[in-house]
Every structure is written in structure tokens, then in C-alpha cells.
Amino acid sequence: MKTQVGIIGGGPSGLLLSQILHLQGIESVVLERQSRDYVLGRIRAGVLEQGTVEMLRDAHVGDRMDREGLVHDGFHMAFGGQIKRIDLEGLTGGKTVMVYGQTEVTRDLYDARDQIGGVVIDEADDVTPHDIDTDSPYLTFHREGNAERLGCDFIAACDGFHGVGRQSMPKDVLKIYERVYPFGWLGVLSETRPVDEELIYANHERGFALCSMRSPKLSRYYVQCALDEDLNEWSDDRFWEELKLRLPEDAAARLETGPSIEKSIAPLRSFVAEPMSHGRMFLAGDAAHIVPPTGAKGLNLAASDVYYLSRALIEQYKTGDESRLRDYSKTALSRVWKAERFSWSMTMLMHKFPDQGEFGAKMQQAELDYLTSSSAAMTAMAENYVGLPF
Image (cartoon, rainbow, N blue to C red; front, side, top):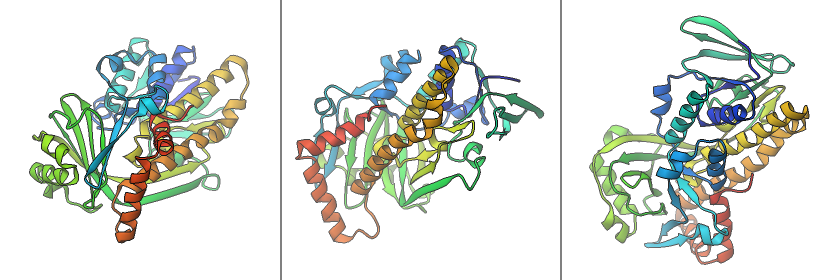
């Protein structure tokens, strides 16, 4: 097989890159290790920045998002028994975010690729990049037990944190920056009415909590928990009681409870790999970086990577100028580190740390009090939350 851009990974970043390139007349083939049902069964984040929303619209995959997504022009921060609202729209000159699940984004992208004849090969096993530092890179893989080869001009590794893309880069080239946090998030998805029309981030002496949603009838809630927590010990009743303890009284009183339809524990980490390219292979999304979910940046960072990479590839094919491709890593990392900073600062601010003590808790409260009473501080937070410019 032969194509122009070989894409490893059939998640949202790989599919979005393929869709954008297709619309510009650039061929690509997406190789996904898992089945399509498996990919669409993954529960992931659902807060889209303004820039991500506009990218999806430009890629002709925004119609259902615009019909079913929930536009949010603010969110709440709860601490010390009080709740304060951050007015995103007012503080950023009209910018908002969209609550629309990553699973739905992926489904829309799959549908779009199918409708215009995009090539997505699911259940491609043992995908391996070769000759990435030459002018003729290629990918090998197995499909239904048969060995196959895909020749290409460039490789985009959009294959996640555990993917083969980053692992194929020379060890003496790659530098890893990482912070693993001493807690996780216990998350529950339930067919219940959300406790509020907007998200609530809660700092509490018992630990962090987040009230989110996927739709007006589907809620997503989280509580901070120990990394070694046994999920089997968390009944639905125990989860709801713990969540209520961490919310302000009026929010707890409004909380609608019900059976969970999904329950899981996610560890938190900050992770960046530099550089995000080597030879003719380029990393995008979780293959290059991970953020704790506190700042709702994971999917959005993947989208910004795709923005930079797609435009660099389009310029190369349209004009022969490879300068944007050469600068891709530097350009993408500049935004990555800013989003890492925001997610790290939100994580440090909102969670209870084992060694923070009473002084650390007082500092968090002072910071939250200042943040929610200063127009300048709220503006800085709002600008980061809706997304820095691409």
C-alpha cells in the first residue's frame, strides 16, 4: 500500500488530521490497533475549547455537535462553603466552551471519514514505523494474520501515551518531563440530571470533587481518591454520600442520584516528550503529552497539535515549503507547556495533597479567595480555560 501521510491511531487526533488533509486533497491512511466498537466505547473528556469547536466545524464534522452540544459561558469554583462563578464569556470578550463528549467527537469523525471514502484500517496489529529519518518512511502491520506494508511520505503518530510512535524515536533524542500525582479521580457516569447547568470544581478538606455532564440527562461526577483505592469497595451509595460531603450545601441538596452506568479510577500525571518530531515522523496528542484532567485540556491539546501539523503538511504539499514541518515541534510545544502549566496549577490549587498540612490548605484558600475576587486573576483563568490562541 502507498499513501502520502500514514497515521497511527484512530482516536480523535488521528481521525481529525486525516479529515482535514482529505479536504485539502492530501491522501492518508489511518491504522488503528483496536476495533471501532472498542474505540467508541471509551469514556473520555467532554469540554471543548473555542478553537477546537471551530476546527471541528471547519472540518465539516460540527453539525451534530452544534445541535446536541451544550455551550457553557462560565463555570463555578466551590471552596470554604461558598461558590463563585467564573464568567468565561464576559471575561474573554465573548468566548465560550462546548460540553460534548470525546466519544461523540470520535463517532462524528468516523462517520465523516466513511462518507467521503477515507481509509481507516481497524484492528491493525503490530504497527511499526520504519526509516523515519529517511525520505522514504513506511509502516508495517498485520491485518487478519497477514503482514502488510504501508509506504508514505510522512508518519503522524497519534497513537496515545502507550503507543508505538514515541517508543520508536531514538532514546538519545527524546527527553521526558513528568510529574505523577499522589492521587486519582474516581469517576461515575449516571443517567441523572446534572446538579448544575455549569461545571462545579470543588476544593474541600476531604479532597477535590468535580460536577460535570455529557447532556441534560447524563451526568459525570468525580471525587479525588487514593491511587490504591479498591473500586469494588465503592458502591453507588458510598460515592453519592462522599460527593455530597464535598459540595456546598445548596448544591448537595439539588444532587440527583441514581445507578452508575460506568465507574472507574483514573491516575493523574503531567507528561511531556520533547521533541515532538524526528525525521519524517511527528507526534500528536497523548503520544507526546498528558495533562491532569483538572484543566480540561487533553483533547484540546491534541486538537491544537493537529492544527499545527495539518497546516504544516498542507503547506509542504501545496508549495514545497517544509519550514512549518521543521518548526512543528517548537511551535506545538510552546502551546503544550502553557496548557501543562494551567492544568498543573489547577491541580495544585484544587486537590488535597498528603504533605500540604494546615499551612498548605490555608494557602489554597487564600489563592482561591484572591482568584475569585480579582478581575485580572479571573480573566487570566478564563483566557486559559476557553483556550489560548492557536
